[in-house]
Length: 605
Image 1: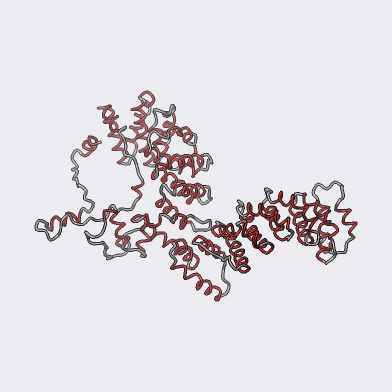
Image 2: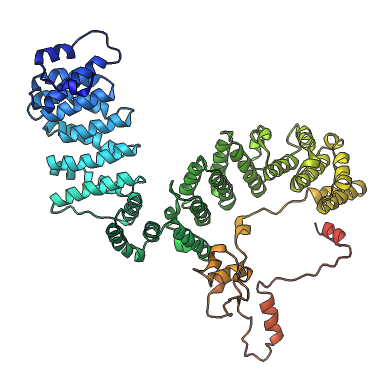
């Protein structure tokens, strides 16, 4: 039956009979047909108001299409029959709490259109909840509903705090919600003498973000857009500036800015410590922008904002882009190493990710957990069992090496550590060098900690390492272990099981002299590549600040310190100055001869 068939004048009694029919209608298809006839007659101007009680009874049917037609009928006839319209309030309240966001939004929107006192009063609580709803579609609908409600009762809207709730939506993460909030506040401000559209810093940022979806079709539109946005390039807030840059020029320039920011915060991290939200990743950011933002987020993370950062990283770790997910998982581990107070939460997050059984996520998590074990020895060994359950997922050299290190380091606590290592040794000769080195060391650790369990594995591994491989590093380590184990097992234990220095994230920092030079090349290619210009531009001269006793350089480790004495002093010689320049970190330089190098190193260990 085509829709044109419905646009025929229907008899009220026949429509009422069909509407109240008790015949079996599981799909409610007959109800839909009758309601379509009623809405069609209503559209043609025929009075269908006498069917009001019968139509209201259809509100209970949990079918979205039926609810839409019933709500349209209510909007049209509630003014003429306000007493009967009040009967719909319980169903409205129930629909506003429905699990389906479309029904929640439909209920709120319909109530805001009906100017009946009791329905207006009943709308207050559901509307307040919908403005904070988890679904953006409901929030954007609720924003417009506030403007509609303001037309009915200005005092009610102001007294119930809906204006402040609308302003809170200006910093919503969804651009459509922000746009509707702006539209609602604009509508209200035009009807009020004391309510103005105020945009805070974050509100401006999200409005600029919402404009990203606008594509000018005429040159005039593009020029107008740029003219209106360009003043934001001089804004005091970095978020507003970066978003304006992205809107006017695109993500490529944003990436340039991010690379320069990464240099600046390595020298002065306090500059942006309160603006970390600026660098949270958007779903539509290009991958190179996302990776740059992740690095900046990690460097700006501290004890005060670590909860926000960790929450973001856990969300990123569930994305679909493999490179982005890997970087996010690794950042969680680096966060645990950097901030001790958050280590427990980071470990819990990594274990949750391991339970997803996603291959590359599991492997990346194991790599960073190894670093956490080194940073906090004897604190998180209880999770080793969970890690061992995922050995079959390891096919990348770095992940294999990390897991082998864990097995060797805790071979005395893992009952079947010899069996696990033996499984890895099955492909020893085909593995990359870094895996072979890890297997060699882990097997020797097993033998030292549990001689009985490792006695069958050690000779085999040492023979492979010294006779069947070509890599000199692997051969040398094999010979050193063989000599130690055969001549002095006590010394071997002291060397192999010696306490390792705890790792830190300071090793991620750029070499201070290079950083100082790059900071003098801000806004150039060098600041994007993070390489000295001499490496890619021939005959380029290096830049460096001359020493100054005025500058407060002690605050920034790695900067060249001024000469220890005044250059005009009689006992200050050019030789002293040359020594200072050649060794800016004031580090004692020791020359190690080639004779007896291995023996001296072993003794030092």
